[in-house]
Length: 473
Image 1 (cartoon, rainbow, N blue to C red):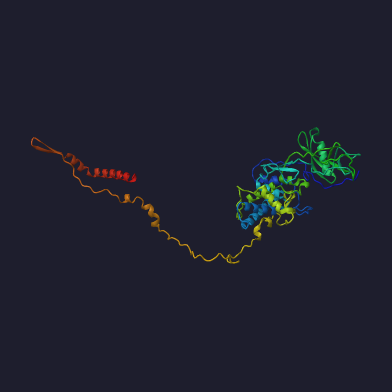
Image 2: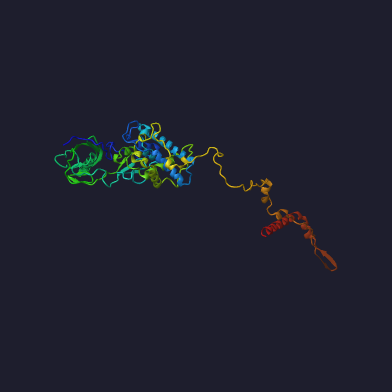
């Protein structure tokens, strides 16, 4: 057979050790940051990268401008630029915290890790593909970790047909197709994992596939994990003589369908590092972009001295708005690689400001609208002859007495009413008997003795009666 070759491919778990990190559900920001940084970075900040991904900062700025327009703000509103700048600053601050906890440079932190911090573990509430055709789905957990599951569907590996080169794992390269072969190194590793998976209760998952070998993470029936490494051999060129296989996976000499690996719960940083290389060029799912904008915008709006637009809680960024921005950006639209790679590896990102944000010209019509610094300058606009209306007149400011007059002038009749003067004499009845006249005066003497008390009582009684009559009129 030919010499062992390496295609540099990666599986879902490329670059991740056999240990899967699961965090306990503690409260506080320290746990969330720890969940994000508990894994080695995917891209070293200062290292050269063969792939340069479009900037996420430009897409975020475009979505902010689209949301502002949808909520009735003018494209020329300077607060749009303030909002985008504040989002970049908030992202950089969160990245610095993550980088400090992981002992890495800020530029090695991916955008999706920063968004997960801002969202507090609620970035993706349901399983969501990172790209429109990604091989895996992410779902956020309350402890800051993510559960990554295979998206299923078609095989991510190239089809195999005669007379094509093929690759096999282990001692499976005699004279024909072995029991675990594939159209690529990664496909052969996946074939071996599917062949061995379930044997004697063991669960096999591809850890990495590179340098002509496969590394497998094996879960033991009684619990615990171990690793196993198998060599990958190549058939050379033009050696496949079996039937065509669309999945590119050969198990026990027959074409097998692709079986995605079981769900894995791990830190965001570990999940980002393990994202399949085949997903990197895929356009970022608009739902993920919208969720990132909402998380970072909400975080930035809470910062001290924030001068941008208020975060639209009742009308946040939607997948439709994010999709429109991606369409406008075209080849500059963010990809899965833009989200899961270190921000310092993105095209246009400098080592001093890897999380810089900006509003693309396609989303910012205000960039082409001149704003005069002097309102008196510019071309004169003829509005027709002067109608001579003049300045409007203003009423005199009322005095305090005029303001209080309606209150103090209530019920003027009641204010001027008084008990009328009245004079009377005490009746002294009399009668004649046997030629004598008898007169009763004792009651008058009694009334006279109590004149003041009786007078006061009747004044009060008639005052109350008169008041009731006036108020009920």
